[in-house]
Image (cartoon, rainbow, N blue to C red):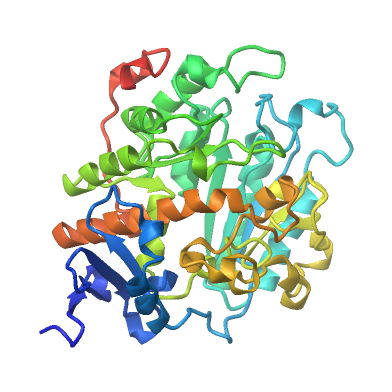
Length: 473
């Protein structure tokens, strides 16, 4: 039975309670979270969404009726007793890389081969692990995320430090999650075997077929890397026991993103993230997705057919909608300086791995342990204290701008790139529409996305033979 305003109770996956209904003219519905009665759609305030996905959702939020609905909902705030405990380290164990990618935020091609403190020592690696455990005594699990430079240029250090962390975690009764990023050149068979044995998650960088990949991802000496990477990816996809096959791609310039996503899907990856490159001159990442509706339509078709993959940022947004009000990303753009920290090769602590080369806010050294919350408060400004974020309907699903993106663009560490906000809002609004439609027909699929119970894809051999994306366009 509906209540006085026509809303119908709905129970979604994992017992999630939310309500959806139609406004008096029957043309729009409202979706919001009721989990434990603590939040509204996990931070997205009561969003009025059009049934017609081609409508301008931002404009609809300006109607008097929409404003009235929004005003009824309380603003989400995190629990005041939630400690800011660092449980994840994003590790830049080396400044070096065997590639010289044009868009690298570490500006690796400019470095000298024997730059001081460019490689992490075994002693620093162990101090880093000790500091992580010491700073999170009550956390059930911790995470080591190896990013580099190219982390696997120090393969032995990575393997040995992970073993040390697992041994220490076992003694303390803590789980240790391991993630290793690879540019694909270092994704050799022994790395794949090791990752399967220790259940480490590998994240591979592939920007597309060779002609696309090699535009920006050449060896430091100018040689092409695309075919080498594809050979390693093929072996990885065919042999790994990992249920989640993760790929990260960078797209340079404003272009359609659907062809690249479909290509990575055909390679056999079931978790895909494509980021538009940014630097101090080019920062229109969210506005650079020119075919958003086409990409979401393809994703929705896969989900409704039972092919469950995770495409970011959409899967991450779905996670926020189905979580229980605990994730700091509802209140902050990410965990930087809050629940995670970056570590430089020499052991300096920074807000995240993006700051291993930039003159960002220092946070001490692993020899001294991880900095206390009171020393990190300024590094994680809440979205309700950022302008113009605190007046935006999407503030709690967004969390505000990435600190490094804002910093790089000259807006300051906690600044906001307002020229990207419309693009972000369109992504959030369209994803919420997808969420509501998929929940109505196959709610179990949403649960699979969140729990990463993903479909094991059979790779398309043709994808490993083509040179560019022409056949996908």
